[in-house]
Length: 270
Ligand code: DGL
Image 1 (cartoon, protein in one colour):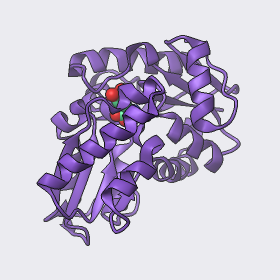
Image 2 (cartoon, rainbow, N blue to C red):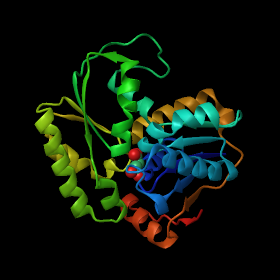
Image 3 (cartoon, rainbow, N blue to C red):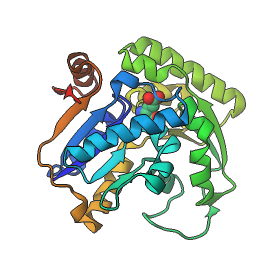
Image 4 (cartoon, rainbow, N blue to C red):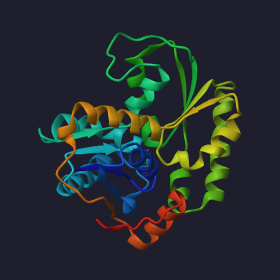
C-alpha cells in the first residue's frame, strides 16, 4: 500500500505531512530531487525530463499513484506526462486542481460551466516557471469568471529554503509581497502556489495583513487524495514500506527535513 509524493526538494514535505495525518494507514514514499532544485528557473523540457525520472523511481518503489507535490512540475510537465508518458495502469495527479476547487467553492469533479465566485482579486505567489506557464489562470478559467489574478514570481525563495537560510527567505517573501501590492493593492485572497511556501506561511500572512485569506495546498490536497482513494482504492499500489528518497546528500537533506517537520526524518539515496 504505497502512494508516491514527488517534489523538486523539501517543499513537498508540507504535503507529505498533511496526507500522512489524513491517511495514517497508507505508506507514502517521498522523492525529493534536491540535487536539481530549484525547478522554478529551469526550462519546461528540463522539468519534464527530471519529473519523469523521479516519478519512474516512485513507480519502481511500488507506487501506482504519484502526487506531484510541486506546482512547477504540475504546471510545466503534468499535462505532457499524462498525454504521452504515464502507463495505463498508473496515475499521476497534480496539486493545482484541489486549490482551485477550494477557491471557487466547488466540490471534487464538479465540471459545470464557469461561474461567478465570491473572491474577485487574487494574488498568486509562485515560482518563475509556474507563473510563466499560466497554468493556474488556465485551470481557474475553466471554473470561474470575473476573477482578477495578479501573479508574483518569487525568485530566490525556494533556493533560500533549500539552503536552510530562513532569514533570507523571509526578506525575499516580504519584498515579493511588496511588489505584488504595488500591482494589486488590496487582494482578497492569496494563493501560495508553491509547496515550499507554507514553510513561510506566517511571513506571507503577516506581510499581506490579517484580512487577506491565504490558501495553501497541503490540507486541500490531503482531502482530495482521501476522496480519490475512497473511489479508487485499487490505486494504492503494492508497496508497503514508507520511505524518503533524495537525489541530494541524504544526511544534509535529512537534517533540513527534520528541522522543517520537527520530527526525525531519515532520507536514503534515490
Ligand atoms: N515546491 C516546488 C513548487 O511547488 C518548488 C519548485 C522549485 O523547485 O522551484 O513549485
